[in-house]
Image 1 (cartoon, one colour):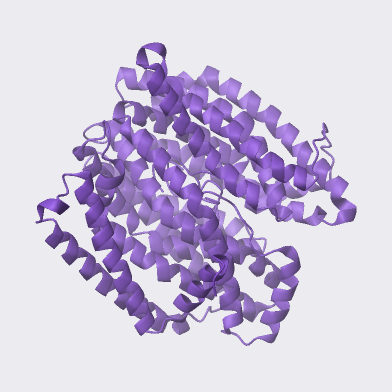
Image 2: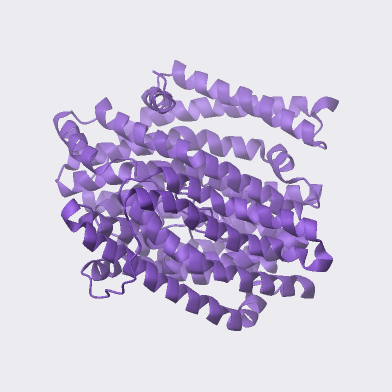
Length: 593
């Protein structure tokens, strides 16, 4: 229930999310967003258009399973991972700042954010990689540059007006909506949620045109400034919190965080301006609704929009409604779920979304030229890389969940009890990480074949899995049941997509992956034992006391660092090919041999 941002993990940072190029603030993980910008930072397309033809030629001449295809996927993925890192870190800082305000402020703000984010994904953000970039790519030739500008700024102007109307309409209807999503909140928390949502919704006026311009720059292979721009949203919110704290609650300082969303949205557009000037994309006041690119965009995005509306707009807000009614403190439970989501989105944005975007251009070329064997090899290379990272990431988050949450969130008014709730949610979310990596890549494969209907249809089917766990569990088991319901939904989406792919397109020769998978699982098991033993042993020492921030930091650094080193060593000893490809690609991006 995608991005990869309701209280559950998604939209994934590119993208992933998660708030457009930032991250989803609430709701389940995006099912149909391959690396949505919401996911974790940026939405890159690292394989350039000119390079694709060369890449295709190489893969055509190389045998299936050659290191050529593997290297192309690894190089693209490493570029995206490195590019997403800065934005992900700022997003984590932003979440720490929000959590420190305490559940009475963080709960209303995070609940208010989901209504804007999910609606924004539905209207425009989800179309970036599904419809905008594929259509914009038809007009990047020099002789079509004027048509390109006309299409881009027709969309910018239409989206700006549409978002202004939507924000104004929502301001009038917000009381009815907030009463539903925050039903379990106290009166003061409901009032704050209402005011936050009315302010936050006006950020759509900036976020809408931002996504269109972002897609245009990525189509033109302008990656630098968009990478900076995606961090502006997080910085704006942080500035809002700081200014609000200085002003003080008696002077409406508690609304600084909501105003910070508006500042962040404006900052994103401002940071795109250098890239826009560089690409000579001067503004046009135009409304050419008969431009041939408009119907193409609508045709590509129509099935995705239907899914977004059901999975994000309706189901994500229903999910918030259930979370507010869970036993205990509804606002604390919503905050815990969203904080756990933020932690989970970090590996999703850096790995799953990065791999999906790095393989999508190459898969598209191979699908268009009918290179079936190379297509499958590219897809499987991405899946193996995803499992190589996501299996140990899931295990590490599960074992070290409590010191991680203590370290990151236990500041200000965020109590030890609050971190226990977040750690519990994180554990129930983390099981899905390997499946999310596979899911994102399989969706990229379907999108490369211009098939958005199958992932959408499967998304509707997996709603049943979510409801089967959430409805009986939210009032009995409580908040952990909603996190587990999201895991069931997203994991089943990957498995069903894999089955459908097998029926429609033949075998992916998964048996060839079993030896590598076995080695990864063995290495992860050794890593997990080391992490658990170290965490248990160190916890007995005063210096590593989990009750202190320093103790939590040392536990995470020592136990996590040693466990990661053990995993890396095991992978090298077991000679898993993908680790060498990924290491070389990362070193190349860092300017080393």
